[in-house]
Amino acid sequence: MAISRTILCFITFTCFMHMTKPSNSSTDALLQGHELTTSDRLISPTGSCTMSFLQLEGSQDFYLGIRKSTETSTDQNFWIANRDMPIHDPAAFLTIDESGNLKIISNRERNSSIMLYSSDAGREVNSSTTFNAILQDTGNLMFREMYQNGSLKRILWQSFDHLSHVLMMGMRLGFDRKTGQNWSITSRRSEKKYLSGSFTLGLEPETKQLVIRWRGNIFWSSGPWSNGSFANLKSPLFQKDFEFNYYSDENETSVSFLAAYIYLEPSGSMYGGVAEASYSCFNNYFLSGCSMPSVPECRDYDSLYRGSWNSYGVMSGTGFKFDESENLTNFDCWMKCLNNCSCEAYSYVNDDETGCEIWSKDSANFVATTNLTAGGRQIYFLVARKKVK
Image 1 (cartoon, rainbow, N blue to C red):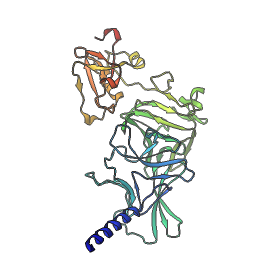
Image 2 (tube, one colour; image 1 turned 60 degrees about the vertical axis):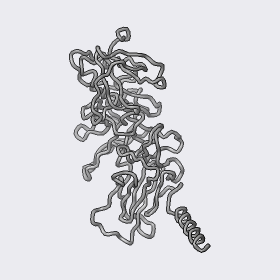
Image 3 (cartoon, rainbow, N blue to C red; image 1 turned 60 degrees about the horizontal axis):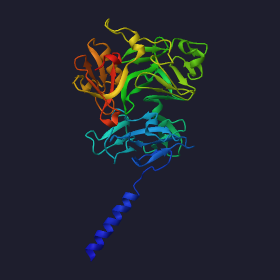
Image 4 (cartoon, one colour; image 1 turned 45 degrees about the vertical axis):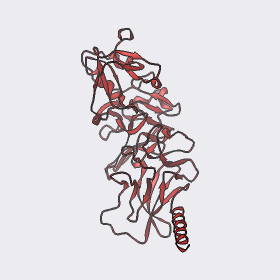
């Protein structure tokens, strides 16, 4: 009987300790020594923004993201902490350790922690200060060192300095000459993955123009800043959607967005603004300042603008698959096909619409299906439909 009571007391104590373990269920701040688990969330003071762990549909990957509280879809997160290091542990958590490090801990991963902010090596822990991370109504996660009386000592790190794929109001594009900080956004690899894609949008230090780069090559440029706007965004079509504030001094040159948001799509298009339209070098909303990728003589430039005919189906022949380590997007695959004169069709390889497979004329035997649920995938052709077997 005594042993049973001892066991019962131990179980009760263990459960109590688990229930009282510091966590953040719905506050705006993560305190030092506390944990933000996969079932918790931070909510900004007025409730406008939320930070929590999320999973994309059909994926086992966990991401730590921030979104507007009115958005219900996990796809609508405008900032992702670990986009290129997804974790697979439902017991993972964000915490601030005793040394003042802000990190995501996963016991299942080989590298058990993802460091968002690392304290100075060898720095002595100051007993007169503590640390916290607070989610602001702008959507900025700010990591701070605080005095014991609650006053701010210094801001150590903030998410607005480490952008992902969306530019929100209050965020900046540009560069800080004093710290070397460069603010830019990078597209997703596909609509089903938060992994970094092949397009970036930033402010060029030399020309002071907004530039979209595709794998390092200039894809689009805004033209110089003049009279309150960029030269290639002055038309009435763009002026409402692309309102910027330009700032420059001896230390910093940057632009901040003043209207809604800009989402850099995996294809390099810019989506958003007041009208929530997609502005691209390839669709009906053509942007001035496009620098089209070069193509071999066997292709004509009209094919770049016409795009590709596509349909759901399967190929009876096997094409050439590029190495997964190349991290190819669907746009990259299109360019691979365009630059191979024998290529007549291309498609992604993986269910998350990444990777690349191309087919030549001899192997492009297409069998149509209704949609993806019928076992097919979206195949894109560079030839007229009547020529496809």
